Amino acid sequence: MNWKELKEFCNSLNETQLEKKVILWREDEAISNIYAEQLEEDHFNYEDSEGCVSESDAKSMFEDKEEFPNGMDDFEKVYDKGDPILHEEF
Image 1 (cartoon, one colour):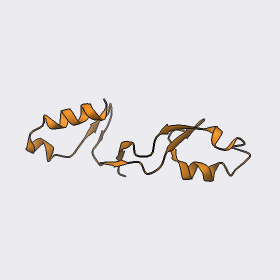
Image 2 (image 1 turned 180 degrees about the vertical axis):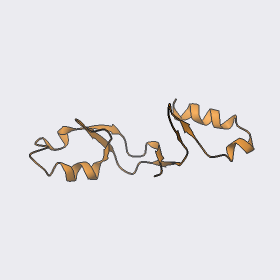
Image 3 (image 1 turned 90 degrees about the vertical axis):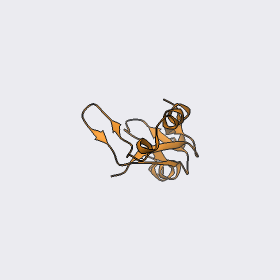
Image 4 (image 1 turned 180 degrees about the horizontal axis):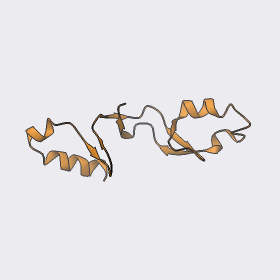
């Protein structure tokens, strides 16, 4: 699903439905504490990681020359600054 499809879906809901909490239903759980934002920085992934980190966090990580000898070349950009994203609020 892209953001346009999500918008079209939301536009088809009535006012009562729009007032309800957003729920992401997964195979064995339901996530209901969700918030939306636009990313303030590019986000990167690196080998063996299960998530991604902001550009500023990535830059601080590659100061460890032993683990990241190639600096930012060890990271792959996965999201651009300004991309919309949904998060689970813990």
